[in-house]
Image (tube, rainbow, N blue to C red; front, side, top):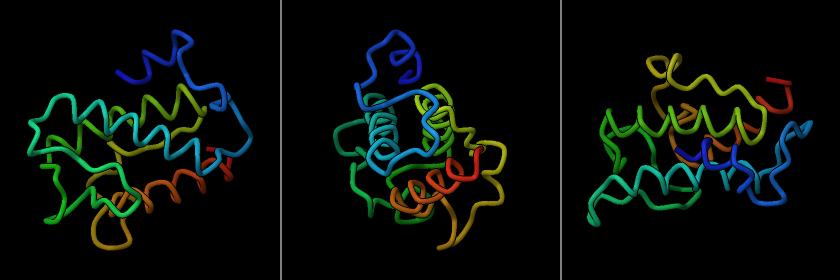
Length: 121
């Protein structure tokens, strides 16, 4: 998993563990690394695009429900390891629905994680 790789010291230099507030750049880097992990398990025609406007949840998503759970687990681990931010995705997954969901798009997820980081999650 991504988090395991970062534990061994392979995180990019600008990812500083325990920063007071996670930057947009660092949050997107974690999201994209987790998308890479999910994509490694998927066929070429099932790849999740690494773009802020990529839909993560719902009928327009490239992810089915199992793929979304796999991504959420990877994200929780990676955010905790690399940015020291608790991101309760799996436990709150059932409550995330509609256009206001933190999982609506990559950009929505990044904004939500930045807010959690600023709030000291």
